Length: 472
Image (cartoon, rainbow, N blue to C red; front, side):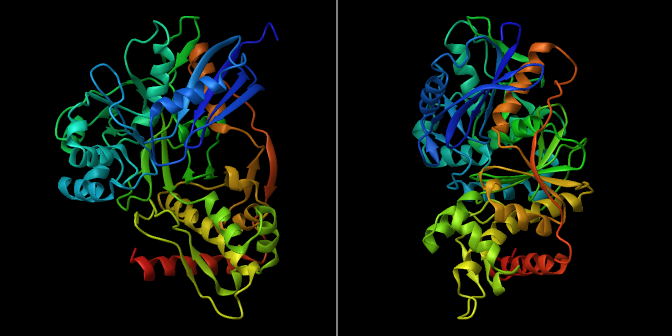
């Protein structure tokens, strides 16, 4: 162990802080830790720091030469002139700014104008809409704000502020591209859009190069730029061309590295940057793994039994279709929507069909993202399934038919943390490219023969229900 160089990645997610310590050369995981975050759509950032301190206790960072933070995207952390937090951070899954998103879209001239400006169409998740809501609904607090940073920016700075290593607030291309006031196309801020949203100027963090350092701690540990959680996962998975990731955690995401920005006026695909200097077109939904938990609760079973029930039903769930918008939805942009169960009859009202409809509905919500990438010329050679719901046997076996692509399930791992650790190793090395770390595969699932028509019918029925119910 003494001749190893160790690096650490921090995954500061909605639900917890996880630290993954890896061998800088091979990517081998040496040790891990975890501490929970409070539930909710807004939180005092100090709770993130408490979780970081808890997860970094007991020598977890002993011998670590470099560290990077991968954090939940879009969160609004406003600071005053003394860098004190002005109000609890609004998180990505807080939808109170839906009206602000609609107003901002109209003010700039519509979706196309926003895509031209920053590669995305405002929805309630993005920081720029939260700033408008803040200015309009809490003007006295907003008047105290001097700067705005993202969750990963704040935690990176907090690590450096423990000693004398803090110089300035920093971020990276990946996380900045999810704000709504930074453009992956031009590689620069659009501070005019921030001013339009907030009503006045705010200071923003410096955007570091992908392999740059934000500073060093008093102990000499290098602190890399860090990035957003999706960008961190992409780094952790060491993706190849044709690899499309479908992540089924609290939220659902579809993303893939790409050499150029994708322009999508529908707003389904956001033109994010990645953490390597390239692009990361991404579709995100509010509802993913928790749909299965809600279905299991409704039926009165655990998740293992939900799996068994879903696989006991035929494709198509006997005609049941679930729109899984249990917490509203981001894509499509339906922040006030609720779930819809359609096609219910006495003959198909069985636990098996309801379980199957939950799995199919959750996945169909993400099929739209994979198909949108195809429509923009992105090749889909295989789908990498990650996140909590990827552990479901039903999800694994049903997904290939719906996605029309083989599914690969990587070995269970904290891929955001691994990606952040890989970024830390890159910053430490000074090399032109990040180190190559192998990806361990748990299992692979081909597109099932003879079920293409049934799977296509499931997707078509789902899409028709979205249109008839919500007009999108």
